[in-house]
Amino acid sequence: MHALRCGLSIATMILAGSLAAPAAAQSMGPAQPAARRLVEAPPGFLDSCRRYPWFCTNRTTGAAPLGQADLLELAARINRRVNRAVSQLSDPENYGVADYWTLPANGNGDCEDFVLQKYKLLLDAGVDSRDLSIAVVLDRQGDNHAVLVLRHGSGDLVLDSLTRRIRPWNRTGYTFLAMQSGDDKTRWEVVINQPRDSNVLARR
Image 1 (tube, helix red, strand yellow):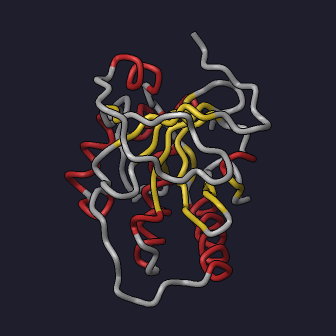
Image 2 (cartoon, rainbow, N blue to C red):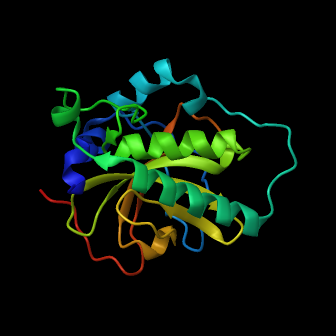
């Protein structure tokens, strides 16, 4: 599935959305964006919050935190498991609507659905919700895509429906545009940050 079929209107969301005062920075690893501002959340995200409160609220299990090696192993296992189990299918083909964020209960889903499934499995395994955020990006072809960002001691890591490999955000070749806040799961922040190995520009 090409990333464009995720149905995210990222450029519209950022350029036409109402930007508020600068938000508190959240880590992206070695390179920090120059500034972050609040932006309106994608409509599909708001609808998913109503159906999946765990996706939009901070939650801790009270269990002892996983060690960094164990966390990475868990994330890699879940990333592979979901990528194998779910077949990529666009929302118009799957549900008959342009943008619908849901768990892939029917075995099919687009990029946001992969993120939701991985997010839930990591939460259920005891990962702190503050260490998980969905991010919207432009892929190497300049098309819309969504990934799950995991905060790790080595920097922010990306779980991606398009690869079984977990990579540091700045090694994906993606341009990060906006992401869910780690501290307030209902907020979205503009990132506008390109990895070192990316020359991707948004299509006009």
